[in-house]
Length: 90
Image (cartoon, rainbow, N blue to C red; front, side, top):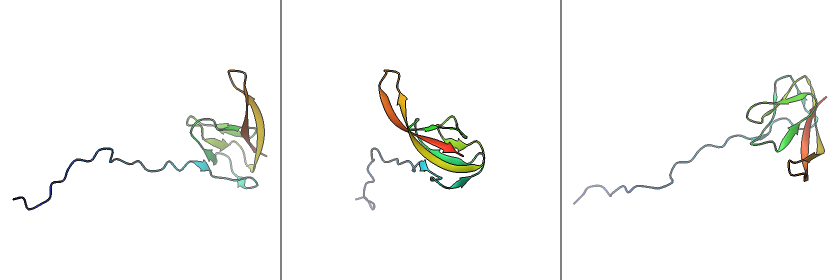
């Protein structure tokens, strides 16, 4: 007889931590140059004047100012238009 119960193998056990995505600075908030405004996967929101996009689609402030969000129509490659939120620093 065994002293311990058999520890069977478990499939799909690994779990990854959250990526902390989302809006970091909201409309009306002051930002300094280089500060992260939005962390996202893919270009769900687009960069406007006063902002720039890094390699992982994170939108940063290019200058000091106040954050503003605005809806824009964007044409896709297929010709269909979609609505996107544009991030602006004034």
